Amino acid sequence: MVLSLLLRNLPLQHMSITDCSTPRSPTSATTPSIIDLPLGHICISLPDHVNLFARHLNNYLLPARSSANQPIQSRCNDKVTLTISNDIFTAAQQCLASCCVADKLRLTKETAQQWREGGYTLTPATPPQPIGETGRPAKPLLVKPADVPRRGLGSEAGRAALIHAITHIEFNAINLAWDAVYRFRGLPQQYYSDWIRVADEEAYHFALLSERLQDLGHHYGDFPAHNGLWAMAQKTADDPMVRMALVPRVLEARGLDVTPGMMQRLKKAGDEESVAILEIILRDEIGHVEIGSRWFKYLCDERGLNPASTFRELVSAYFIGELRGPFDYTMRQQAGFSTEELEALEKLAAQPAID
Image (cartoon, rainbow, N blue to C red; front, side, top):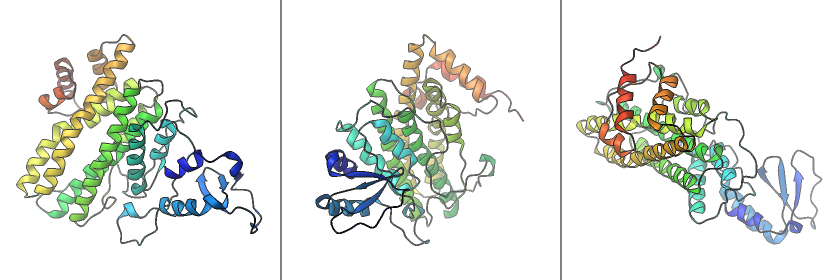
């Protein structure tokens, strides 16, 4: 971020831009030395009075290499993509694309802070790209949901497996929030403020859980996980109304139903540290689901649609035979669900699963 600001404010006549893929002749003593910043295939030649400071920044921003026995979030072999842009969509894309967990957390925090300080515009530099796979580390191994191992909470390994599963959900939630910012254009400024806040809070949740995993002798990536959340993001990439209905209000809202029970089981197992973290996450997740509810209803109103019937139709179309109860009415009502919507969920959950 700081380097981006440095380049943004440096007069163009003071730097030259070249294609990194083109062979360069060795620089002479009088030629400004070149820092290869990973701006696509672009390299920037900086003058000597800026070069030393930029090199120090470059060394700080590039992820460090470390030994294989360290946490996976510290083993970052991809370069941070720095962009000369002040629009929030490019910044969101940068956060999405980072495969290094440590970089994704840092970029999320910095981008959220700069947004709050008015450092980004809503004028896009480029249109959104078709959705693909998001930036993620090489581990965890992604498997089918049914193949994710389930263990009891009576052992430390079982508790670690549960915490890892929640950690993976929070990692996906960071990407889901940034994609909601990046992909959907032309919405009110508050929409982007809301989802940037969600990304920032999900990154905080991930950091808390990651630290707890280390206390339990594990790291993010040690257990298999599934890709269900991002798969639904791909299915809903063409319409923000559908995205708001199905990702925050169905998939993420499930946490409102099951987290209290998990907390009770962990408390029974004597794991008060994990319970304290889940209390923070549950409190914030009510707000995150409420954001999805509010913008779903806003988009329905924009199109002259009834939110309750539209929600029922979308859930029926995308989750036929897959919805599971019970549903926590109190928390879901705090998160913006109507009684009509909750009754519709009950009926849909009663439908038999499809083989």
